[in-house]
Amino acid sequence: MITVEVNPPFIKLEQFLKLCGAADTGGIAKNVIAGGEVLVDGEICTMRGKKLKGGEKVCFDGQTYLCKVKV
Image (cartoon, rainbow, N blue to C red; front, side):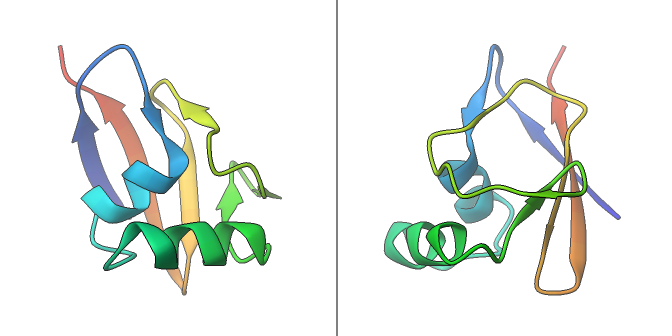
């Protein structure tokens, strides 16, 4: 699991995928989210604007990322 720190109070799922390097571009992030390829806390998430507020586990392409809010 890779921990990725984000600035409070939240980050959108598509931005998170770009930040952690799982998606090279915003377009790729939007496509994989819309295609049901991304899990948030074990459930498929197709909302690219989903707000991650810290503590969520995002799974994509065989890798798990933990969203951690900077303190």
